[in-house]
Image 1 (tube, rainbow, N blue to C red):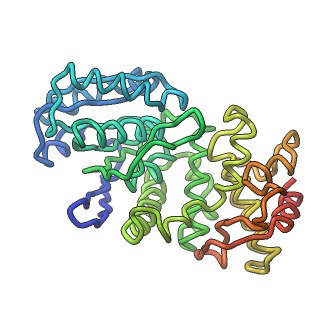
Image 2: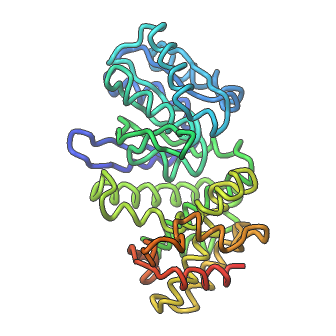
Length: 362
């Protein structure tokens, strides 16, 4: 069995990302190596609990770790202060103390919510991320961003709180619905365009193997994404500089996602459209040529991802949503764009140029 370890070097907050397949039975032993209390809390959602609750309890028992499992409903709307308060109550009732590790076992919502609870309960208890979606495995579980939503905006209440371990079992992806898996691949493709020609070529040459979740290529893909994310986080942990390039495709993608009320498109699908639009913008600014725009289209569509703005969304709505209001004096918007494959930067882009590029993304 191949096991890959990626180190995130952040001084006293350094940690390992451990990646393999058929690996979940080893979780208890990996947690026990960290030297915390022999009692742990697992936070998961209803969907994951139905599939894996017994397996994770058995794994922790094998590592001589007693555990309690707290299950929250599945869905973005439950990433809230109300759910966090429910979890605080359960942690207090269970006599959880500062040396008891909290294991976030789920996708991005569970990781963000449980991470926020770990960061704030008793001023911080050890956090272990066990991501169960591709999106969480390559992106949200690494880097320490934890948060809950507010009625006026996503992720408005949160902090940076690094985990003590990220434990990735790629076999868990076998139970992930195909549409969600494809959507997670949008973030993988993003890493290729902004940082790695090597990853992009692997994606370009092996779409069938990746879509079939073949272990050898999937391990390479996930490990490469984690390496890229780790290096960026090491350079810019608190998101004041280079970490911004991870938002490639996200400004326009988030606008489209919100305009469809988070119901029509998955996050990765919206980001895919956002990357296609960003490529059109960069081409108009003569940062990249038409061949790179076509590369976006080829790779994104080869994984079944959308590249066109839904017809029901007007360009005016998108421009308004990304805060390009005509009443403002500001005539530009900050967008992450490619200078070439493997190199991205934040640029100020005139609103007229964005409008033109959006028209080309219809």
